Image 1: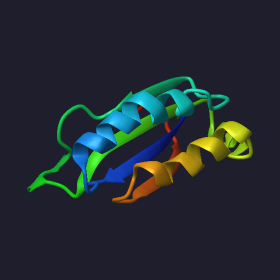
Image 2: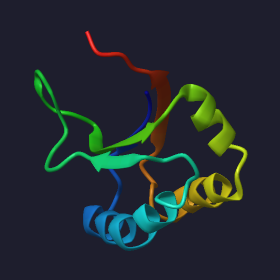
Image 3: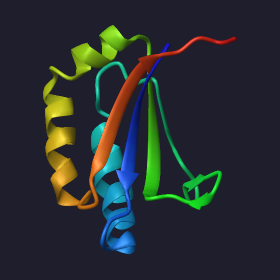
Image 4: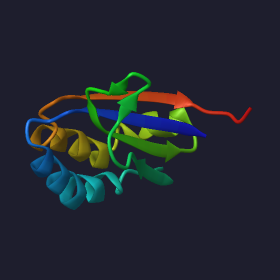
Length: 102
């Protein structure tokens, strides 16, 4: 299994971010080939010391990093990535990695 984690920094307008993210971005992202599960943080994103600079964390599940890399070549990912500029004015960091149970 592999994950793509999107860490969304706090935007200028939280309500506008949430409205757009849920009504437009999630449905767009759910079209990504190879995506098997889509999770997001619920409520605030905190560090052990308290509130963080992040507003939302999205965790997208795939079969492998190779599947994520193949998806990045797809028109669906190109459209999803292009959409970030419409709402993620605080910035977003993307991380991808293989997972294993221990």
